[in-house]
Amino acid sequence: MRRLSLKSFSWAFLLGIVLGLHPAKLAALSLDAPVFLPGDASKFSVDLYRYEKPSSWWVNQGLPETFFMPVSQLSLTPKVYQLHGVEYGIGATGWFLDRFQARFHLPFETNVYTSPDLSSHHSARPGDLEAGLSILGVGRRDSRFRAALDGLVRFPTGRSPFRAVSPLLATGTGFFRATLGAWGSERVGRFSFFQWINYQNSGTVHLDQWAGLPAPGASFQWPDEWNAGLQAAWRVFKRGSREVTLSYEFRARQSGHSYLDGQLAVPGGRIFSSIGTFRVRADEQMALEGQVTVFPVDFHRVAYYPDSGVLLTVALHYYPWG
Image (cartoon, rainbow, N blue to C red; front, top):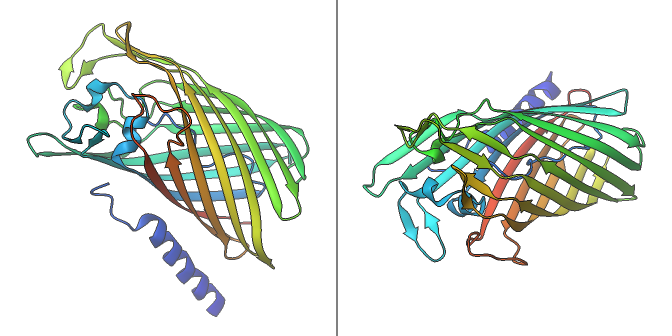
């Protein structure tokens, strides 16, 4: 009984860290790769996370300038807007037959901006539901060497930017997205490595309205994307079921052009980001993870990705069967 009470307290404490911070001043239209990568070898896990997105993150997504028109601009160089977002999410990942990994993820997003007249605008809604599947071609769930084909679909369950009074208050992109790719992993002693690459399709949205006004016959085309990354992890400490792991990941994204009514809205471009992760597994059933993402890593700076910033992610992982 005492052990159960202690575990319940630990759960409440860790859950408070992940979800307890108030988002009123803290995304949507997410064009970046998922927060969590496939390939976790645990049989089954439930994941909760909090993902904070500052003003500069939005600019670096390559969104059309017209999206920012109603938002108060704090500075021109670099571009900074009075705009913040926070995303909470819940997901689950599980293996079956030791060769197939299925996963789903549902985000909940809160977005806030201040307009030039100093009035505040706010939205809080679910985002686009994601479902994915990895199929191992080499190795099995807990093998030292694995290679898999991977697919992910995103359903337009979030609020479309073309049905919101302001596009930046949306929680989805408004179209069905599919991602196809591959990943591989290697484990050598205390070190492990993970590589991945995928392609995401472009999609056209037919506008019902724009900025709260009717826009019959108009359309917007989101860009296609290539995403790739490399991750190296080091298990610093292990005693029984308790572990501490540090990892570093480097990501690259190549986007195509986006079009508004057939006219170029945002030219395609390339952006790099760098991610550091600290992960503590407290026992067989719980792990706490913190991520710091720095963007862009400045190998290829261009005028329409002008800002740099930091993303903070805190996640709680629960393994019901250890």
